[in-house]
Picture 1 (cartoon, rainbow, N blue to C red):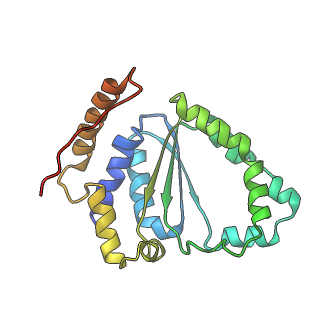
Picture 2: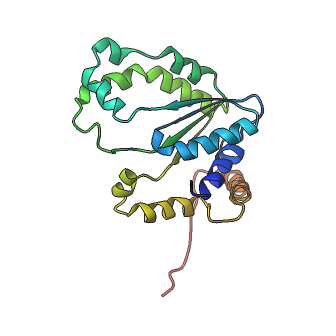
Length: 204
């Protein structure tokens, strides 16, 4: 049975972070390790009236690609990825890694070549996000690999991630909206300023 806090996280992502509206086109990208969360997010997005496309990457898929891809394949830009980047309203990436070092033995030139091929899509993504045409969000689904990177047990890492997301609170969506209003006030206060001095005292 999935951790009940994942349902709260799904509600935060759809109702607050991405603010999904009826008719929005949303892409959810993750790995099968985060299936429980992805399915809950999918449910909330459908309930909100969105058109949802899911993209689950294969375990070890990137490693296979970079080991065997030709130069033409490294240079290829998926027309589907291009269409999503240019036209979708929202994008969610759920980090859920099997192995954080899976590409450590890959030729860096191959990685660089593939990333260079995606430069134009990255530019479009950033421009649309800056113009508020694309809403995007990244969230972390705790896995053994990510817990190991943090030098923590999986249980401790889960508690760390869920506590940071306010998922132990009864209504985290309301708390995040309140935090959003505080951020808007701070942004307004900073507007037009190029220097801020912070003063404080040290208690012993």
